[in-house]
Image 1 (tube, one colour):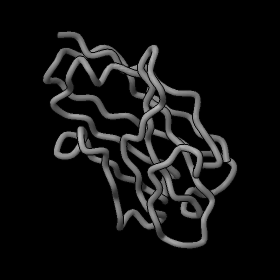
Image 2 (cartoon, rainbow, N blue to C red):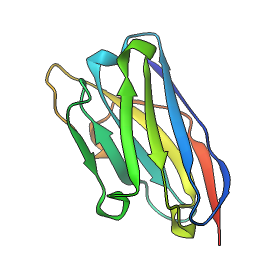
Image 3 (cartoon, one colour):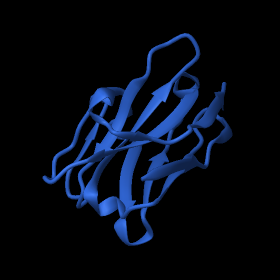
Length: 125
């Protein structure tokens, strides 16, 4: 499966952005999916994950209550709604997919099989 993240941009602190991850090649309903991010000079970190059905989600503690992950298997897409953005949210955001037969969620990047190219989110203070 090929993934393409989009929707990044420049936003002021307190603002919102909605990231999209479009998939091609195979239906995303076969994959658990997630969002990760990497700021300059830092390691990649987990943001949020969603199960194949969308019924289960998990968030990094710093994103809880501000970010919402969702998916639309009919559109072969996943989304990340980001509200109350902070300057420390500035990073390149990547979407990822994990081929799996069960309906779990995964928070470790090493567990994912496919990655998109990333979209830059810049939050100004």
